[in-house]
Every structure is written in structure tokens, then in C-alpha cells.
Figure 1 (cartoon, rainbow, N blue to C red):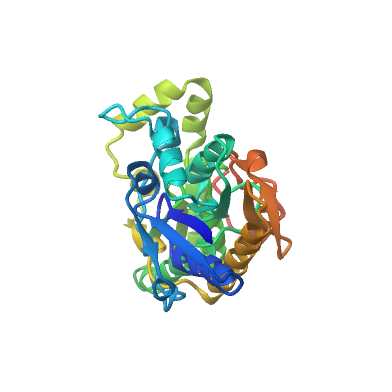
Figure 2: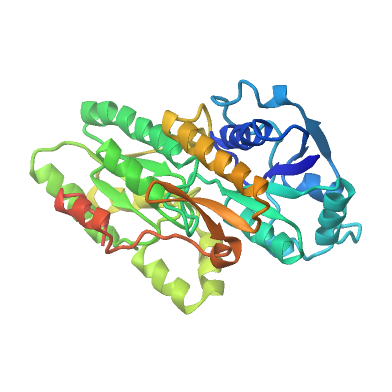
Length: 360
């Protein structure tokens, strides 16, 4: 009997179900006796013993279904070693539930924080396989994460829809795209949607340069401008403050009257050049809906490869996509690392060659 645990942790995305299905089908097609236990609502389920035995029918018809059939939650990695309000040792509790179910391994689907805890469990002696999920595409060691392409489609649609109203009213529009620490999603959606200005966390902006780019378009007879702004975009001034003192930077952020960086940028553009600016925030729609065909294929491949690793009893890996080939990357080599956008990357240089401003 092969017994496998499975959990989805952190923010949801469109392709979690597709990935779980890939694992389940890869195992069931090759194992006569199989039990898959789904820990409910992320690591909470593994900590508090909230789980259910999943049947083959649970994995049927979910390839196109967004979200996650076993629920998710955020459990900050930095608090994993901190006992809960009742004094429960969370790590020890997860180990106990793992051994209680007599699991051969646990498949963990999630982003960076999830991955760090997966590596922690590996260090504690559990057999772990990690599948890289995040719409941010910021997991180190893999070319692409599942959820990324689906989110690109939604963010690009938002920019596409803004084009017609921006052109009709000769306005400046800001579309705020998800991404607190990295700008992959904003970069790709901005390029695909034809944004004129793209602001990323990795490339601090100068508001004067942003305004100059807008004014240049006006002089060139283009009545509207579209900005794709990552929610973690940062000005050069704030970036310098962050380098000097994280405490002072955090204090400044708490005192800002704006709901997000896009509203601050909009206000400053209006003040400097008197142009009307509107802000659109697609928000959590970027996580919703059905996965794209690309993500469905990606998840089927990653899931099947995870199943193969389990069948071979080869644990402690993230299943990654590298140069369109699925690889097993040791968790210890990637956990805790972020894949950032390189300001000097070829894709950024190519975008600048087409006239896109990054505000720098």
C-alpha cells in the first residue's frame, strides 16, 4: 500500500487542482493499492490533523477547475517554530500526523513560504516532494511556476480592456498588477498588453522620468498612456531609504495615505503635469478562473514527474521546469531564494528598445 499526503498552501491559483490531478493520475495508473490523504486548508490541516481520504472521483473533472479542492491558508514560515496559542509545537504536530497516517511521503504545492516549510519538514526527516505554485513566477530553480501563465492572461485582459476607454477619453490609466517583491507578472502582462510604462519592484522609478514619458507621448500626438504597475513598485527615493533603514522605511509606508502605490503615483502625476489619471486594480481576479491550456499541460507534466519520483522513492526535491524539461531540484538548494527580474535582462532591454519606459 502506497500512502501519500497532499496539501496546498499559500495563495491560491488557477492550476492547483490540475497539478494534484497530475500526481494522482500518475500514481493510480501505476500502483494497485494507493491512498491519498488531503490535508485541508494548507499546513493547518497537517498541524491539527484535519484531513480526508481522497477518492479517484475527487480528481475527476478538476483539470479545468480553478482554486483548490482541499483548501489553502497562509502559515508564515517565521512562525512555524513558534507554538500556537495553546502551546502546540507545530512542527512536531505535523510530524506526528505524518506518522499517524503512515505516509510514504507528502506532496506540497505552494510558493516560497510553502517551500521553506517543505524544506524544514525534509530536514526533520519527512519524505517531501514540492511542486512550484505561484502567479508571481518568483521561485528560484525553475523557469516557470504553474499559475503564472493563467495570471498573465487575466492581467493582460485588464490592460487590453483599459485601452479602449483610455483612448476614448485621452486619459492616463494605471493598471495595478499583483507582485509585492518581484515584477515578472507585471513585466509580461505589460508587454503583452501594450503598456507604455512598466514599473517593477526590481527597477526603482523616478516620478520625473514617468512624467517625462507621458509628456513625450502627448507631444507625439498620443492622447493616452497606460502604466502597468506592480503592487510592489518602489520609487528611487524609497528604495534608498529601504537600503539605509528597513525600520524607517516601514514607518514611512505606514504613514502614507494611499491605499496602494498606484494611487500615490496617480496623485503625483496629476500634481506634476495636471493630467487626469485613473487607477484600475484587477486584484484577486488574477488568481481566479480556469487555468490556461499552457498551465494544464505544465501541471500534468509536473504532476506526472512528481508521481515518478514517488514511485522511485526519490524524495526531497522540487519538481522544476528547466529548458522545457522536467527536472528534480534539491529543495535545500532553492528554499528561501527568490527569482527576481534582472534590470539588465534581455527582455527588459528589448522592451526599452520598443520605447517602453521603466521610470528609471
